[in-house]
Image (cartoon, rainbow, N blue to C red; front, side, top):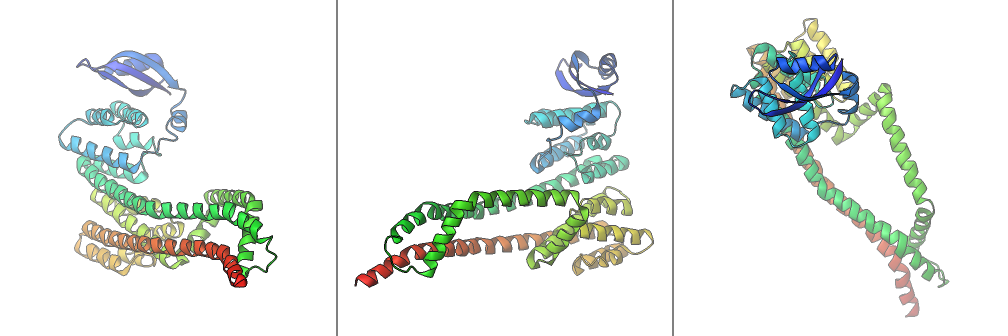
Length: 405
């Protein structure tokens, strides 16, 4: 089946653009006429639907901001009673990015051919996660797609705000690091060699600090570029090994859990994401086991994901949800108690929401604490490095003054 790009006029005389799938150009024109469109231009864009996704949409990973805005617009227009095809077309017109607009028009084209919205979105996995598609599928089955989209919009907006907050908080420390490294590099590259040429003609024993700085400057000047190349190659090989070797990735993730502050942050972040996703899927009417499997698949940390999948097997065998999750040892006691209360009272979804809220508050506190400690730590470290260089340069001058006096 080929993919065709079309331009057509609707019954209101307005021009529409998009893509559709058909076996031939003639069938593509017939499909457009069945939709009440008068085709103006229809042309084949790619030979196969799969190839289309691997080329045009390969780099089209929709940003969190675009996804949150699009989801909110879909939810608002559906709640107003507009048909799904009209909603998708309206959202596509609101989008300024050409690739995103083409993606939404392609989704609209598949929906107009009779596909479910979740099925159409699953054809673009780089833009829409399994959580997104699975939740929409559940909303379509339950007949509450607008409500589910509202929950998804809240979730995506919250994720975007958290990511934006972290990025903004990191701007100042990153600038400080770059400026400090630039100053140190300038001193080692230009200032220290000139001082070395001056000190070499004195014929006086230099301080240990100055000798060390001179050696380091000469080493960096001679081998610095090779050192940077080795670091770049090592990082590339390390990243490639993480992507290819699951066992290596799991060992690395276990190592991260052992780092005091980072390990706790990883645990809370992943379990909070699980609780939030589980709550959204439960509110959409997804079965418990299916919701746990979808939520656990979104966890990027392998040991935590494996532990939750093992918990899902125990739940399938009849174990209580809170007891199965407690055995993973990754969930905080407060979350376990809230989930247990939700199971006992039949209010699992609101208790999952409360557990996710508590854990996300802990994440915010940890992030703010880390950033608050990070900035003065950078100032102290870089200040100490610059002070060392300055002292190493000035100490011989002080010795000369003392010798002259």
